[in-house]
Length: 161
Image (cartoon, rainbow, N blue to C red):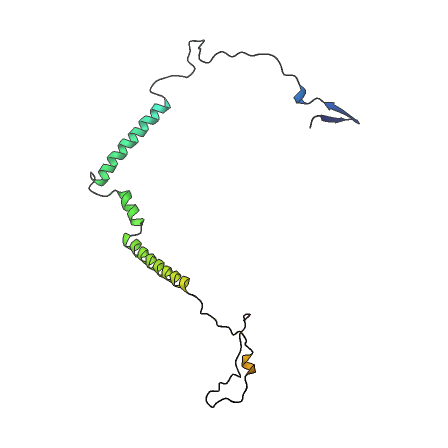
């Protein structure tokens, strides 16, 4: 909103919002950061006793200890590392993965052959009579014996069936 209203004893008075206030024209000057005015350094004490050097030394000592422990556990690389043995014991053996892969390949081959077979399959053609009422128009007379076919239970299919 542009104006704010203060509600006091039956009267509303517009307040000038902060947008219309005039900024102060005082200019503050900062000293340049690259120029040092005093002789004391504000960064603190410098030397090899800081946290960065301490942490670097601890990381180097931990790496050195791990290297020698690793050489001791594996007897200079002759044995497997204990962590490697734990991981290998938790893994599925290669023979099991080969069996699963062979089974999946056979199944995929069967499915591909079935798709090929069903893709080539066609429905048998249906021969429709042009005039299906020819069965009702035939005469029962002048039919030679043995050539008669019983058509009493014949159901004629149309295009809608």
